[in-house]
Image (cartoon, rainbow, N blue to C red):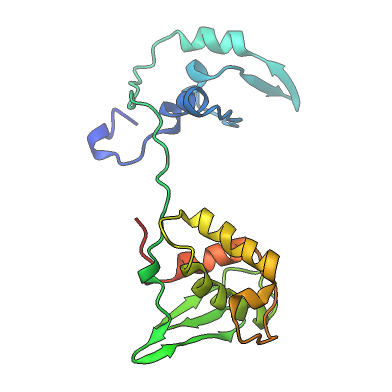
Amino acid sequence: MQQLIASDREPITPLVDRIRQLYEDRGVSVVLVVGGSGDYFDVADTVIAMHGYHPEDVTERARAIAQTPTGRIAEVTDGFSTPHERVPSASSIDPRKGRRDAKIAARDLHRIQFGESDIDLSALSQIVDRSQTEAIGRAILHARRHMNGATLPQVLDAVMADIEHHGLDALDDRHLGALAQFRRQELAAAINRLRTLRVD
């Protein structure tokens, strides 16, 4: 592939060039099942071949094969970069609709009106009751008070801790009685689907 497409025109870093760094820099082991590719032989700690559904350790043979140059050039020489933590901006969580005060409503099982935005939750099959959708909408607004430089996972943890300590009434001081419990994952998905969300 390197001979066909030059590395400066290829935006994707091959896994083979990062797999050893995953272990050395992050302590992450990878179990990779491949067929028809020997590119990983020289970076593998152990190579197991399946013969008639029986595993066989062929590491030494694979290392011998890897000694034969393939002409492949490693595209990455720097360390494995740490993913950037997302810090949501509280000002981007705005439930106002025009000049009116906050407008948060579950339009149906998988749609929240949050101010001027509609949040589509149709891919979240774990939501089974509209009262969960209503609670998620309220939880997004509640999450804003924890967005003071905290990362998104920290914000989610804080919201779920508030609910654990004070119940769903923590989300709305009017004590609506029409809210149902949801999981942290559904709240994360809803926040990530809010079109106005900005992160640093």
